Image 1 (tube, one colour):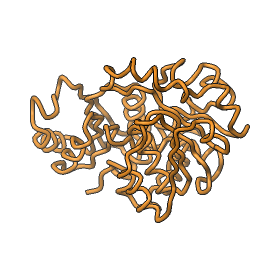
Image 2 (image 1 turned 135 degrees about the vertical axis):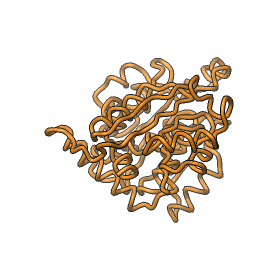
Image 3 (image 1 turned 120 degrees about the vertical axis):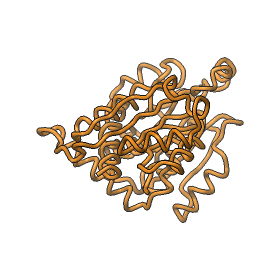
Image 4 (image 1 turned 60 degrees about the vertical axis):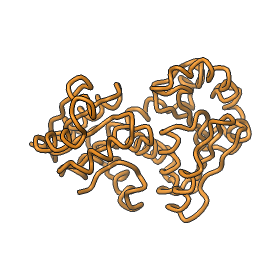
Length: 303
């Protein structure tokens, strides 16, 4: 049984084939619609955390491919509370052809995968966000026509999205520079895993945002305070301003650099309106690519 929980669990060549399939499915959709390759297939969507992009992109992805998806709210399942994760996995996987789960703890998707008889797709966990990473890679690939040798710079809090970019660098061959405030750096164990997977050093860490962007092809940021960290929000607002992606910082990067953000954005905090809506922004093509990258994953796992 093949699942999609983290990019490091997939061979590099298979991930690249998924990106190429995403390019094909996007073009096919834009020129008449996708073939119903998932006709008769169903996808259960388990949500512990709310999301705009994750729900809409997975539901519409299944519709485009001829299948059917349905939403299961936190109140309906109470994953690990109302009912054990093992029991949920065994029950739901008897009804559907695949499950997407958006959870707080990564262990929850791992437990779903352990007990499920159908593929489990990680729609987000506190550990990583592999579907977002595939949309990010697709966006970069469309922009530059390549991945190897590019420099992607992540600015801000080292979170699950940062870790997914790190794993993407290992699997797709670009270099990742992570610029975070002291005390908010990426953990050494994740860097070690990514380096081992790549077979070479693919990441640089720094506490200097200006230094980081000087030769960037991509400048990427995310919210300073993720879901579940709300009690830290005010403290983080005092620490993170030097890591805001604004026009002054972007001016230090090459003119060809593009700006990315996984959204939702807290405008005026980690990114300014001027940059988010500016000519170098790819925020919304990136968001739309969630649909196409995930269609490739769905077609691969469910077909």
